[in-house]
Image (cartoon, rainbow, N blue to C red; front, side, top):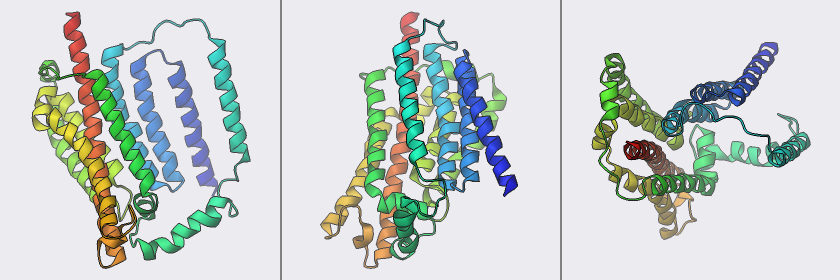
Length: 331
């Protein structure tokens, strides 16, 4: 118990130190690297709190794909922060008021782990007692996210789809030009990275497939698998050039895949209505309700993985192509 408390304090202390360093850093490249460290520390803290699925997501997003996307953004905005301007007191005042309101709200919450907390007295007991019989999968987190909270997860997928569409419309605008070979020419000298990348990328993609179809039995699922799969494609683009990556995964195919994942998710709900069930209640998809739940969860997780992976890669391609177009205009 004492060791666990000391570990919690140590990780939280490191989180505060890294956060303050990010705020004070003027070098944006250092800020991006610190954000990756912050993501790893956050994932470690979630592991200490026995939240393996949340830790998996934080490691994949916060320490994985987020730094890669931010490094791409730095090619457009530059490495160093602009000179400091005068302090604007109105935004500072609003931020302080909001922070105070948030702290006041936290103080009104039940103590962490309290037995009489509303969530433990109603919702958690319902999931723990009825999930094994109704859903029948070992990973209760997946049963909650994919079945009990299916509407919420559908909304999250639609948000990711909307973000990808917005980035493409803003950065690409119309039919993009043929990608240039500058990244490929730049990375041609780094033979060690290219050889190591050829060894790691297949393993990354294979691990993404494992996470995709293992979410019923352990930490994982469509969100984590989609991000991991996207990291493999993005790493390939960074090592072997954008043009080669788009020959493997064309931009037009990605646009269709982003919508396909949402369509799969929504179609599973419609299939339940057709057979006389409720929307996103998968029990009617088979003669056995538990088997129907398994089928529905596998299908909607597949839709989530397709949308997340294609959206992340599409956003990376959009940022990269927009940067190239800007550089061509400047030349």
